[in-house]
Length: 300
Ligand code: MTE
Image 1: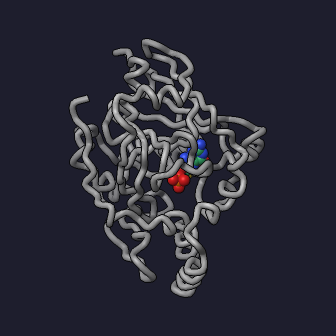
Image 2 (image 1 turned 90 degrees about the vertical axis):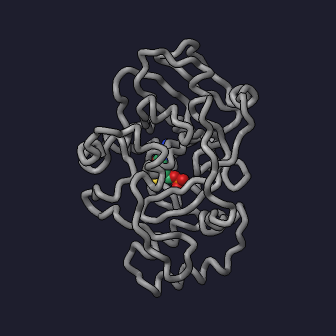
């Protein structure tokens, strides 16, 4: 591939690992309207906690392990992530089951480090390890009729207690337009902070699309299908008014229930700095061209 994206973010800008692990507590504390007292409490609780992986008191979303923010960290250990196979099918030259081990061994490039900004109501800089999704798709050979890429998460009731409840239409699915999927900023992440991704964050392989909101980042992917039509996405199916197909970070388009114009910077201290959210999360120079001529209020 001719163009390879270069990290412009420095090691020193990376969000501290302990803050990353505990971010949801910081967010929950502030979001629940606890105000300064709440923030001070969480900060104090954190000061007492060692920054180890065993101590993942992580608050995050992975509904296959429950809808509570603490559920993924408590339940995700039951997911068997090795061996792991991803089915690549649909409009490709060589459909089939690809073992993750083989994929990694055949990557033409070493797995790389990607420092990406990410944003929801908060923002961080997270160091991922992984490879470009384009390299994986090229391995299977994309047919010229393909226009979209559909992704599917594992659906294993024995290993994922959350899928026993119909809170979402299982399996969790996501999608990208083919040009978005082939962009060098779109990666399959297998590691984070220099280690394997913990189960609750999408082991052994998850999508990261840094100019889109976090919920586009589908976890523990078992199937990738090249399609001609726009594929369904889980959050859009659950609530089409609130979640569109594109999900590009866009400060000009408010979510129906909250503004998306600013973000709290995790790790900026007790009085967390608010900053204006940038179009496409600051990646507009790289990816803005993909949406030239589109009305991004209609295609949110
Ligand atoms: N993928 C699956 N399979 N199931 C999920 O519930 N939640 C999404 C996304 N990917 C989700 C998922 C949402 S809502 C968010 S905010 C991010 O994962 C959270 O990812 P994180 O672990 O990096 O915070």
